[in-house]
Length: 469
Image (cartoon, rainbow, N blue to C red; front, top):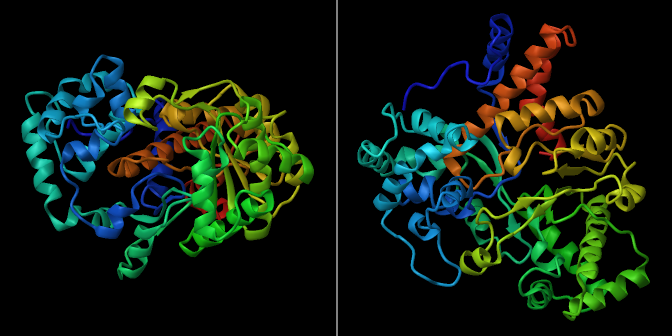
């Protein structure tokens, strides 16, 4: 690739750019803490070579393939596996050539910056990625992947990752985490995160069957409200044995409820039998956020809420390819009203940590910053999904800092399935934060020595504090 610009994402004014550069120099080599993401724990457990460049950069990355799909490239031709068992392209070189032919579609996107960074910094590629160079770059990456230093654990260490959290269903047996724990690997720490959506969301596929499996796993009667809640406590404790410090909840709204035991029991009986209305389903998800907060008060798990994504927007794609195929679309989200029952119950508890992620940017300065700026339990997660970008991060700092400050935010997490993009994503976040801090100094709103301290905090200390690492 053409050499990465050393001052990328820094201000264009020379003096401010110089300070941003110096700030970045002071934090660029700090270890990476990745407290929320979706890399596969099997990679670290088995430590097998990645199959080919396409399986590393294209097929698992919905940021990449959704853009190509938007321009008429079939998902099958990019090797995206089909949930219905239909055929997809298996030849990595063909997928790679198609990727090269359409790489121009990523111009100006964060994906382009991440891939360019990985090509240059991880694989030492100096050629521009084009259809003419696709084969040579494919061969070069393939040769690298065959070497021990490009196995998952070696890359983990070369990326300077101190800790990475994966995300597993409440029904997962965590066998890969078990294997990591008994492997003798001491070069990195991999922990799990408790994601109970499959047994919390009545609109999740096979919800009733999932409840039965949940009961079998925990030895509880998950057809009763008390037994169902006890099953969550048991599974949360099990996940903590494998390093979990957080739970994660992907709900379409930020709705919370705090129903009486009688009303919650009646609601549960409606949803467990498959007769729940959409209103019942939304109310139950809301009640379970409050129940999870109550359990967090007991066991200390951080409560992450990823609200506002209208998931699997296209039913045809969902039926054909399954979940997480680029069709999760942001929706308007009410945080002030919807979080109130939860915050009424637990918002002033400083020992509770609730981290809220948003996809509706209009809420940042109007709702979320004021909420986080007063409720001890509430912190703001970094820009997520469509706003995990240089401009999204910049807008986030501008929108929330004046009201919530820096210390009601939690640093950065990459939330990715694309392993080789992790250093790139963290570098973007560090550069954007340094540019913002340099601007505050240049405009007389922050002392230079404070800027250096805040840069360290945003990069390293806040994330460890927020996630209790």
